[in-house]
Length: 320
Length: 290
Image 1: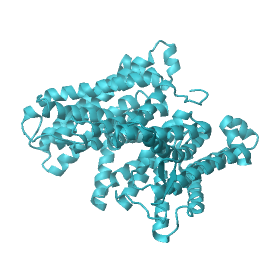
Image 2: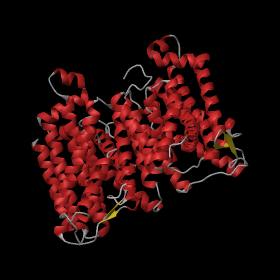
Image 3: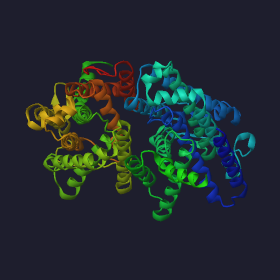
Image 4: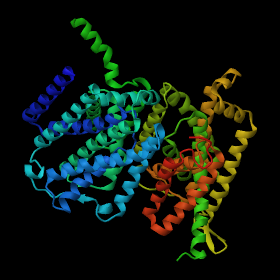
């Protein structure tokens, strides 16, 4: 636990240092987007990595958070920070709702993956069809730069904001690793029957995990809206966000503290390099994500952190 | 509003579309029934087959129906190779891994198509594209009628292969009891790859029947993938009769909810059924157990 906390503190300092020291807009944007990817992957990791429930439709919670953020501000005139709290609560609530349905009926494995995907599709078509989400046109967040409006003049502010979210997600993950609840969740992941036999209620444990996971996705959705000031049903509930969340966690290493962060950094670096080499082609990013996903599952099923573990062990042995 | 004259064409339309859905779902259910894996790339592979049919017509002038003997074996070979080279190796004995690999495959295929063909929606022109046939009070496009007949014939052929041939017997043996099949000398890896190949061959046939009355774009598969899963789950994973009836049923439901709720909300009818079946009766209408 101590080592985890020390690592997280060092990471928080590094983010602050980056926000202060980085001068180039390109690098600030890169750091911001990589951390945004890390938040998506961390959110997925809470449920998929520690709970063993693979969701293919995590964009559902992202989209709910994004729409809640913009609707609360634009339609109801709520303050941006209050809207953020609403967005997180709404996404967590939808997580609990989907979880209550799916887990009550004992859906797992492929069935759970499919039902989350179906829910995301239902919300996408719903958002396309109803009035209060702006239908297919999407919704704009008017530009009003001030800290009270959660709109910062430069990327620095946004980098600090997303860095803060990532730190909170790291803390929650560290708590999962060392708490009783986390132990129950991992027991359910590894063997649900055995967990039940020792008195763990899998339904409640998984429900809490999907609620937490959804809340962090909601925070990412709200962040997206604040940065890009626009959302439409395809961005909100389409497959891109779901894929980015899942691939980041799997590439880095599911069920690890630093894996999702590492995976998201690696993916964003890879995407940036190929963009510089081949230019901006539609679909190129997703091709890379797909190829990386297949290769990692084929050759490094425990992700980058799993592959790096022998190295770490070797280094520790040498140090002792 | 709900007169026979309006309902009947809609139902007829749904039944003809449903037959093609059934053919696609048969491939999916065969793969599930034997390999116990969910082929998430099924829709993306259908998209590949549709582009193949499109390119054959566009550049070589081969009629979609005459392309059947080319596209079906090609898809079979693709499926056989995919299972042997990629999917089998990636599984490491875990079902989730296969789900992830096929998801990765679908992402790659869809976005490669997007890079090569852009997101334009493409159609083909044939002499019979606009021909219609009158059935009772309804007019129906000739290609849809051919698709209906073709899908039924292909499904019957598939059933014959599975019930009457040696390959079919081996497939059923592996589906029932993998270790036992291995003990009596069945090459299980070969049977797995055959199954995947046959499942994709169904997609090849479906693509040939679909394209004259349909279109192709890089995202076309994702529309079909959830429909096909809905059918397979509704009919019971691994059940052939279930896939056939489920396909027809879903075709009609889609057509009717499109008529009643409008084009975009009509899709929700399918997802509502999907979620409801998954939650309430995950073994499906004809499946034996969950």
